[in-house]
Amino acid sequence: MPAALDRYSLQLGCSLYDTRLKKRRSYPGWTCLFVPDTDLVIASAHNGTSGWRRNGELVWNQPMVLHHQINPARDGKSVLSLGYEVRTEANVRVRTDTAVHLDLQGRVIKKIHFSEHTEKLFSLHQTHPRRRTLGAWNWGSAVPLARQADVEDTHANSIYEIGPNALEASLPSFRRGNYIVNFYRPPITVILDEQMKEILWTFSEVEDVGPQISASGFHDVQVSPNGNLLVYLNYDYGCQNGRSSLHEINPLTRAREWTFCPKSGPRFFGQAMGGLQLLGDGLVLTSQSREISNGHVESHVIVGDSHTQETVFRAETSALQPSVQQARLINDVNYRPIPAGMVRSAMKAADWRRRLKKVYSRARTVPANP
Image: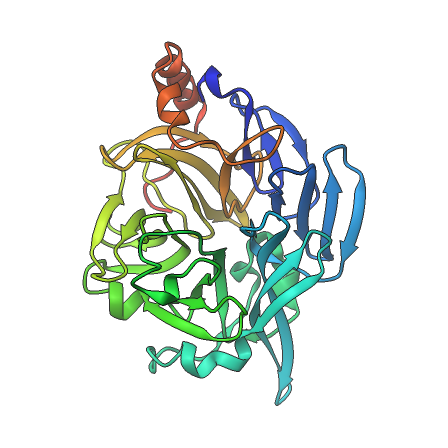
């Protein structure tokens, strides 16, 4: 990364790195949120969720296990994440996801049990198997979660609180304060009301996107300020014969506004996990993870240009933090996301191309056939 970004940190899982990929500090867990405008880090691991100060002091611990993402709520005083519950039916342990809104001490403010909404979730996918047998490969580094159940009937990947956007006046479900949740099982994205009680809107990966994008595996779906959906797609069969891609999709027309499918360099392929952060001026920060062998996961962080389809920054992170769900560029002091446009401006610095060349020389090329 350019020297102009030295006061920012690259968050990879529960670790922060400087712009030269030197670790600044790390916290125990597989998914973390560095809470903006605080010195609090919320980290979840297989034995529960904890709150940590910047100096490493443990301030609270809750038994609830969270997975995939922990994201800030709009009020700055609470967070969003995904949990799970296990029930037994006919001697079969069934895992079902929940969505939770928590305060900064890890206490539940709102919660929805998706086991109560499976009929509606699967209504657009009548032929989709209702359950999937679980194994260690389903969870990567979160293997203990898989061991607690035999099958799962829902599997959520991302959750965000919807902010101000251009569609909220004409499309009430997109009103600020509602929640957008993306599922791998079934392949659907839903919007929940602000009380986390009802499903207001659905977007089917198969029915709504399938005719335009031969795809499988949405892993991160957000609502942008213009009202469009920002999508991280694990398998896009129209992108280098089944590699990963990023999209901005109009929720009204289902048309793609832009797509990032790199034209050159190592192939962009996130077999599992993955998320995105808009950096402004067409730049997108994203991560990718895929299993190499025997459970070892290799991850990379990428800055892509949606205008040119070029990868402008890429570095291997397998030695740093495995199974990266979401990389973020944040201020190292107040944990706020980097302002839009700052990365593009920094790219104009004199040392950008020289640094980029060094990063490419350190990064290991991703094999063509994983």
